[in-house]
Image 1: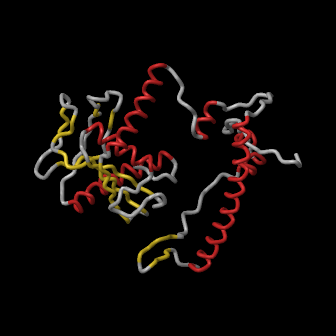
Image 2: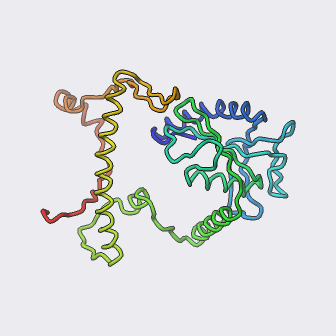
Image 3: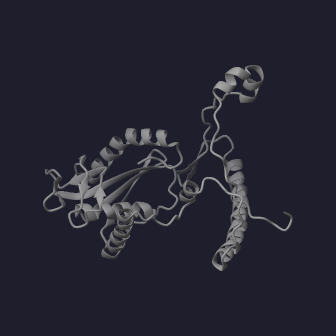
Length: 278
C-alpha cells in the first residue's frame, strides 16, 4: 500500500508503518474485527491464481480461516485492501466502486481466489482522509480477469513473452540502439500522426495547468493549506531542504577522491520526432 510518488524503499517503509493504523481505523468504522491472513492463498478452481491479503474482516466473534480443501476463506465478511495515496485523482466518491482499474482488478482477483464476494478498498489520502470503496464480485468482470490471467499463465508455461504495453517494458527489452534504419508500416505511420497530435495537446494542457497552478498559488500566498467549504483540498508546504554534494567543486579540488566514487549510469535512448528543420 505504498504511495505512488515516493522512492520504492521509502514507499514500502511508509506503507508498513501506516498499514496497521489504517486497518485499525477501518475496523472501528465498520464495527467489525480485522485480522491478518499470512499464508499464500491458491485458488482451487483456478490454480494459476494466487493471493496475499492485507487483511480479512471476519464475521462478528469469528475468525477467518482458509479452507484449502474447499478453496475458500471461511467465516469472512469482506477482504480488506489497504492503500496510501498522495492524490484522489482517478477515484470517485467514497462508498462507490469508482477506483483505478488496476486496484479494481486486484480486488476482483482476491475475491475470486477466496470466494469472498466483498472487498473493501480502504485508501488513506493526504495522510488524514480515509475513504472506503466497497467492491462486489461481478460475474462479467470476474470472467474477464480469469481469462486474462489464464492467457498470461499459458504464455508463462509456453515460454512466450507477453506483449510489451508500457514504456518500462520496452526500455527493458531494448536498452541500446543499433545504427539501423527501419521502414514504418502504415499502422505505425498512423500512430506517429496520432502521437504528434497528442503531444501537441499535452503541451497545450501543460501550459494551461501551469497557468492555473500559478493563479492558485498566488491566491494562497504564504498559506500552506487551501480549503473549500472548510474541507482541506490542497496543500503547498515548505519541505525540508535537500543536502547535496557539489560534484563539480569536488572534481576540481579533490579529483582523486571524486574519481573513486564515480559510476557510469545506463546509456539513455532518446525518443525524438524529427521535424522539417532537422
